[in-house]
Length: 157
Image 1 (cartoon, helix red, strand yellow):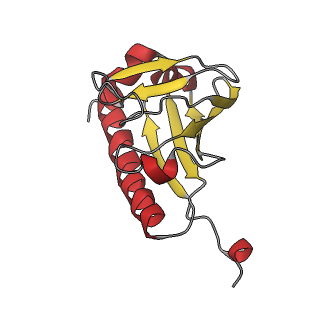
Image 2 (cartoon, one colour):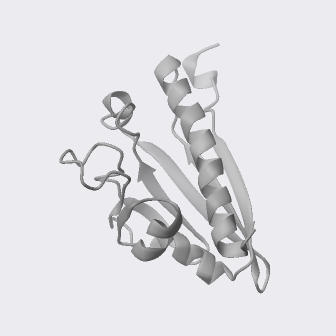
């Protein structure tokens, strides 16, 4: 099988939130909302070319450790979806953070009814090899856990 025939191991995870699509979108756009469930510090400019920088260790003098420092918003249609670049953590940055294109995260917001929204997160761009497979497994687990945390925050479960 040629490399072109190999499928990207895509991460897909979703959650149902008891809120409007607009409110659900805010949890991914607003810096103070992001720091309630996903990261310790956020610098997000939700516009094409804007920053999508999240910092899990904001006091680290090396901003490239455990962050999405330098990542950009690639597409946005508020409150329906957005698409961003994504980087690896300190252990993954040597192979994930300098390759182009970076991995890619798309978040889609689907109205179930007025106050119920399905949020679907799709993370693509995984390469082949043991390091990449380990990183993909890490993010598959991390995204599931993060969305469960968001669900608890919003739904109170």
